[in-house]
Length: 307
Image (tube, rainbow, N blue to C red; front, side, top):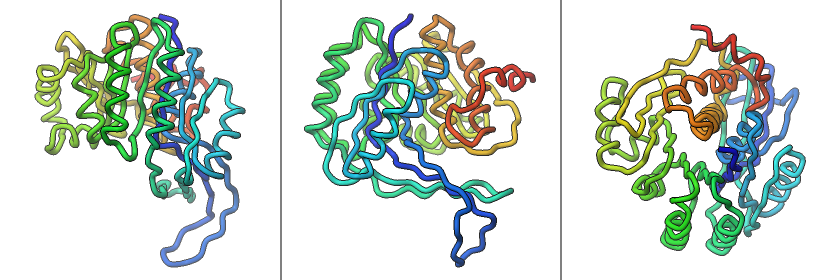
């Protein structure tokens, strides 16, 4: 299937990465180097989808001066995007990197999605989605309420028979959207806990996925958990896990989004879910072994696949 993957990022992020020579609690630290990038799960999924040579189109909601900076940055990305402007300011984030220490991320306040901008975006999607195109709703939806959920449900019911749908969200949106017969739910273990209402362990995962398969019409479930095993269940009830290759982690940011994009890409190429996950896990590991999202060379992947 050669359709375009339309991603929706409801919680855009204006992110600065700063490098410090050292860190000591309670002191003032001056960065030696910094870079700016635009994040949010849908943006990351589009970047990874483009890396995999599949067409993608990012839909997002910038706000204020910070949002305008994000929109300008995204105009230079090698894939098309469409934005729907809101009032206020897009949330900001700060990633602090110190040699030989895990990176630390600080996130600002979420900017709730305005119903007017949301409805314009859904209208754009209804008008532009062609048969075989994919809709991927990625990340949280700040301000989720009936004004947002009702029109989204109406769109999904309209397109679900002709357009594959994939989601990676949590909380009320996940609980509602997982009741639809969609192609893929890709979430992490923490997000799964919000869905099932109890702690998630490797030992409990097969039973949890069996229960979800019986109670929800979702065709494929994938649950990631950092450097731990990726668990999955396909529409035939086959439950399995894939252990990521060992790497020297540089940054975990966006790894789950790369995993999401790679699994979706493989499913659209008619791969079975187990093959899709096996192909996708090394890509997510490659992302973790590099400082940015989807800026690793694809030729590095075969080495990561060795087991």
